[in-house]
Image 1: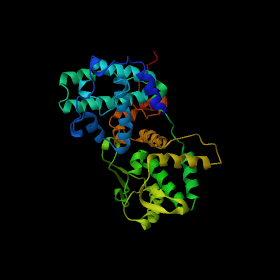
Image 2 (image 1 turned 180 degrees about the horizontal axis):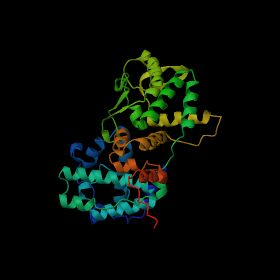
Image 3 (image 1 turned 45 degrees about the vertical axis):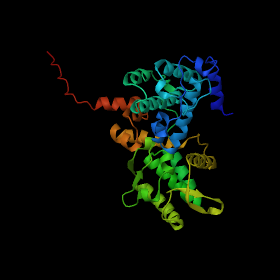
Image 4 (image 1 turned 120 degrees about the horizontal axis):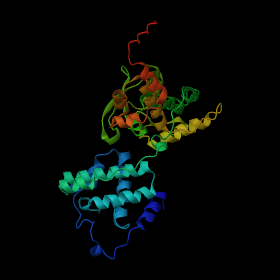
Length: 347
């Protein structure tokens, strides 16, 4: 049993087990199966990318399990029957079992599913508005932005290490790090890129499967293009189509039609980090390269531009990447213009 399943089991134990389905004050099970096109949870999950679907399906299964004493899942629960009291119960149980960041993501899945229930006429507007009125869990200040930004010397070491590797993996990993560092895209977005998504002349990368299924375009810095060009020179020999970054098997054999996954990106960066002997590099994740870019761009660009590059749904999320601190505030204050005060006359 996984840690998540164990936590769900513990949470379920806090609920009074019903004697039977008929004895429930609020029966939450679907009386009969309904088509997936009419099912709130199924409709919501279909709108997500494949990676997000797995995460949010687990979240909805967990919530359904909490509400049915461990006997229901996201497809058997009648989401249209949920009311404010059910949602607050879920919130309080999640609060005791998960970190605030994780619990809030699960609550976001609950809200979106209830929204689909309303759109599908499975619940009234009044019931929907009351049900989603539960607040998110407060985030401790140290959890508002986990991870770290990498220094320029650390990124240079990573790139130099990969450049020194003459194998196909070395060429691929150099380009991979350059794209992550240069565009700030998520690892799920990176592995979903196809050969057709890169325009060499302009450096434009088209992200067709962004978070929430959103589409956006970003541009690779001029200095990073040679690394991607070298990889594409090797990659196109195997096939002109397929994933931009493909798997490489033993012996350096490219599998041009086999897409990598997000876990592979994490493992590649960790292996490269461990190979650096010149310094003990602190652990970092692929998302830290995204943090690095956002933090740097906020020094020179407005929040709206950085938000578009990062693909954030809200500027409030972008602000969380701002690590300029008090120095930036002081610089901003000194830019405010005032005329010099008149020198008092000496009488």
